Every structure is written in structure tokens, then in C-alpha cells.
Length: 202
Image 1: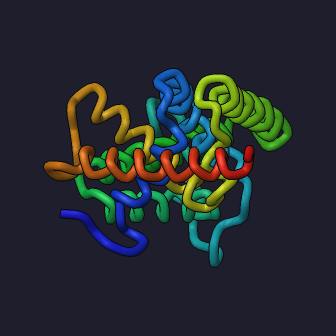
Image 2 (image 1 turned 30 degrees about the vertical axis):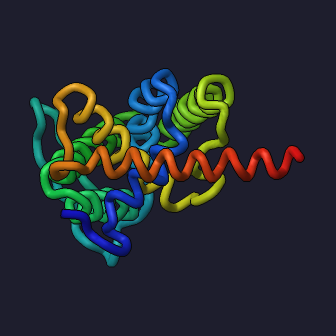
């Protein structure tokens, strides 16, 4: 059963899906969206602890890991909670991936140090964003969703590609009829967009 308001998965998925119909563009996003989140968390590792919260230290495969409860942790937590609220099953998997990204990025950031980490992050971000813009320009032939709704595009992107992968490889849907409902909304959105384009041309 669908939810309403900010947790309306059908609405979010249809909005993002209307900008990602081409299979090559979808594949590009599946490969490059999560690295954007990962490297963002990596550079946010160097932000100070929130409210002077203590660091979490433990050993992983014989290496010391120091987790800082900072802005990076807050972002990972917000994303995780939001995804679980959207859909418990897929959202729990997404939350697990967010947690893994936070821990792994913290481990790598602590090894690289800020002077090297920001360069790695800059190159990775430029590469990931460039490839995605190429995907939209050449294959999708429609501007990215972030140009119409920046917050929704940034927040939904990781969850969208995960749901796409789960549906593509395992036939998963949050509840029976979800994909049929979403596809109808996507088609309506695309038709509206094409009508606006024709109006502007004429």
C-alpha cells in the first residue's frame, strides 16, 4: 500500500524515473550514483564531531578504524532512516549500504589524510558527474532531474538505482502493482514534458 506526503514512494520514484528511461543511462547511474555518495561521505569525514560526541574506535581486519559522529554520519543516518520509511525491505538494504559506505569511507579517509583525500574526492566527483551528464545528453536526451528538483534528485538517486537493480535482477517491487502504477505516472509525466516542449518550439 502506498504512503503519502514526503514518504510517497510512488511519487518520488515516478519523478526520478521520468528522467531515467534509457537503459544505458540507467546503467550509468547504477554504476556512478553510489560512488558520489561514498566520496561525499569520505570528504565529510574531516568535519568536526557533532556536539563533541566521542569517537568510535574498533579494529577491522587488524586495522584501527576511527568513526567520527559528524556531518557525514548525520547524512548517512538521515538517508538511511528516510529510505527505511519509504520501503522497509529495500530501505533496510539501502540503509545497510549507507552504513557500509560511512564506515568504509571513514577508514579510507583516515588512511589518506585530508591533503590527499580531497584530491581523490574531486577527481571521483568530476568523473561521476561528467559521465552522468553525458548519459542524459547523449542517451536520455533530457536534462537531469536535479535541474528541476535538486533536493529530491540528490536524496532519491541512491535509492532509485537500488530499486531499479532489485527490480531488474530479482523482480522486486515494494508491494504488488507498484511498478505498474509508477510506469503510468512516468508516462503521464513524459507526455506532459513533451507537450511543453512542442509548445515552446511553436
